[in-house]
Length: 119
Length: 235
Image 1 (cartoon, rainbow over the protein chains, first blue to last red):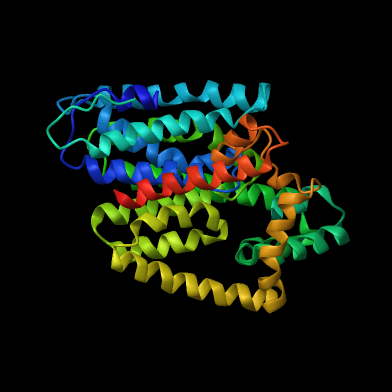
Image 2 (tube, rainbow over the protein chains, first blue to last red):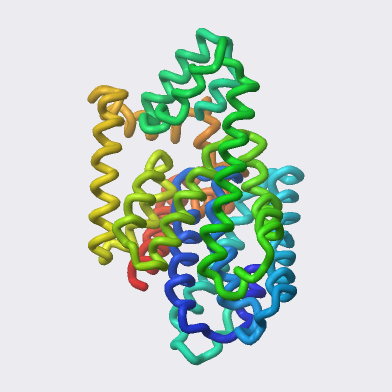
């Protein structure tokens, strides 16, 4: 979901600082020497920032459209649940986070005004 | 860690364990102090109280974030709250009574202050999350060029360092690195096992590289982590 949103729309003026914060948060999770599933909750602002920056064109401004974006966010949940409860292989999530990190890096490095093909 | 203490042990051993835990995560003892105010240290009352605190923090998080987000901010508050609760790690943190939601709240305060340009305040909020230093230091490191943020961070970090020293004494403080090193090499410390439950580079590499090649494993973890940190610092 994050990767999909990361490759979706054009650069907004205020997006670079947010993308940097999201990049920092994902990087923090990746290099932390110890992390459990509940510690991944610090990724919530990163998810919100990525959705805000890249999900939908800036012209979208109705309440309904804002609601649709947030309804899409829980789509991440099956991955957490399956990896944690069913297979106990949460480290696979690190691979996903690594790709998100690279997507955000591409987003940060794209000059303003250009559309980055990330994800 | 203190929650785990409450759940697993009898009263006497639980107290000993909590003292033991406090020795290693000294700042966190300040959070667990109110537990002893409950009559006969009722686990249920403590859990419900912490749950209420966590839920209150969770309700404040959307207020902090949506104010700054032009498009997502237009979504109704109820939907934001549902989105918070629907994130599986947050749900697990609530159920288990973990302290991760407090850290998330501090991160949201810091992000809001950073966007507002109040770097000093952001630094103080980030330093307040140092009870989980491994989830804060890699975030702060790339921001080292922001002098006000670092000033706020270091001032609160020093204060918390003195509080930790007062709680544990020099012996506990100096013994902490040895304890962390010990958890890496002793299987009884499941908490630090990378097998299956850690969604970081360490867990990923541990799953890919065989146990028989510890030097490759360590080398990959160190080099990949250094690359990720360097990239973050460079931006």
